[in-house]
Image (tube, rainbow, N blue to C red; front, side, top):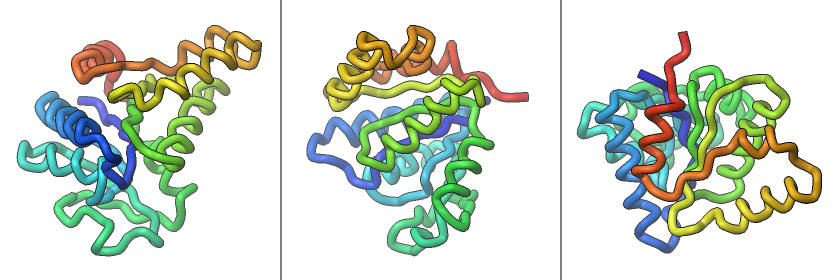
Amino acid sequence: MAKICVFCGSRTGHNPEFVRTATELGILLAKRQHTMVYGGGSTGIMGALADAMLPLGGQIIGVIPTHLARPELMHSQVADMRITADMHERKALMHELTDAYIALPGGFGTMEELFEAVTWAQLELHSRPIAILNTCGLYDGLIQLIHTMHREGFLSERCLQLLTVCSSIDELASWLEKSATPST
């Protein structure tokens, strides 16, 4: 099955729906036998994803930089934990391992990782599918900004199509079914 890179927060946020949808995604990935590639954390949305997959035998690859590879942050039950020298090496390895990208709720780090993947697709450095799960409208402002950038001529129609926005786990599941294919 495909290797799905999930960008998400090391915090849970205030709305319990963020953790609930992360848990649903973890269950979905495990049941469909996809491998999750993620930041290796045990806290927040990252921890919820891994915690949902592990009891189902889900395959997980954690990728964490040395400066964060501490017992209180790393997920102790993720067997395949890869420790990198820094954040640049981390993102390069995550990209190398990945067939598709999903962004869940998160902060600056999530946005930076998501937009690096989208930018690389825009520059035709890869053709992997990329989606946002817009849980509870968290990314409504970002989506509006992207459409404004398109309308004002900073993003072409092709660039606009590089990022799929899903508003539910069911919609994301359909997208995964159609878009996430394993690399050969």
